[in-house]
Length: 345
Image 1 (cartoon, rainbow, N blue to C red):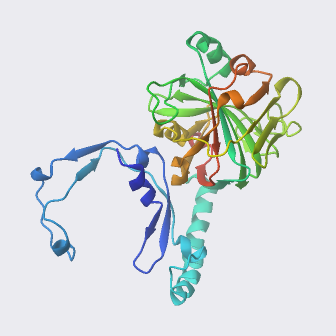
Image 2: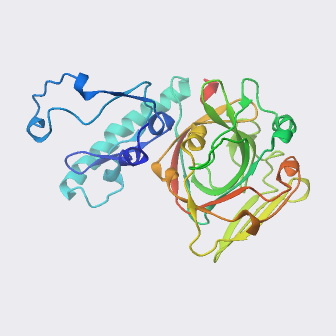
Image 3: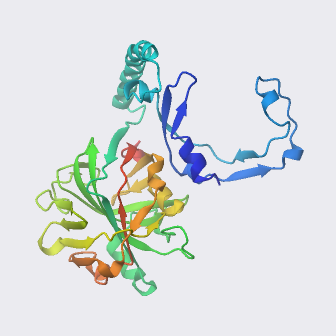
């Protein structure tokens, strides 16, 4: 598989005049299966300008077994200048980008309206307050009860996943992630999830979603109806080094607090767990297709579970009564691009 460094290097692809295209990835990029061909078995005829600069035999010849999916935002630093493009080039390309890509966007919008193309929705997970993930490992004896509570849509099955680099074995995890999101949807979102298989690959199943403001989803159309009630919002705050989180009140409430210690250890999320988020299934079987930038591969702070207070009621209480097995704090912002309700069309 490609190294994360190689994948990250493709976040921004520069043209010779300093203009860059911004690239969003999914697992077809970062966890692709490759065949390494013995360079001695490769015949190369090279008449390009680069021939004098490279050895006749390449170090690697790699063949991707499947197609690679990218989402590209072209000429990114024409609209978001970074000082690498000459002012005259910016001036000439800015108006061209508006007319050229503005026209393409109009065509795309028409195709979306007629059902011939998919919409693309952008969002950003903010770094302040930091995102938090609580993970509970489902014991073997609780898997049947968990499967019944999760009520996974037809065609999906619970599937264990490695959670972070260095894990020796995969496990079935119940995860609560809370983060502040801006973009097409704003506010704090709280998502209970687990990993499933759709027969093709590891995916994410959204078991319950709450947010601090009404937002669109394919189950309740807007989350103003239970169990997505805006009247019981999600809250995530950071004061100093203390992080406090809460979801609603009463029979479906959750609350937690902890202190981020000085110089805490860090972990890397497993690629398979990140890649499971490529397709996120809602409780009615509808899925969202998601692309992301490489900041999702960055180190996350690991908080000692024993230092985390948790109080929870409702559906997930039987599986979260003990302290979480892992608690992550992600203090990096990340941009996402989503094709919502992907499998509707």
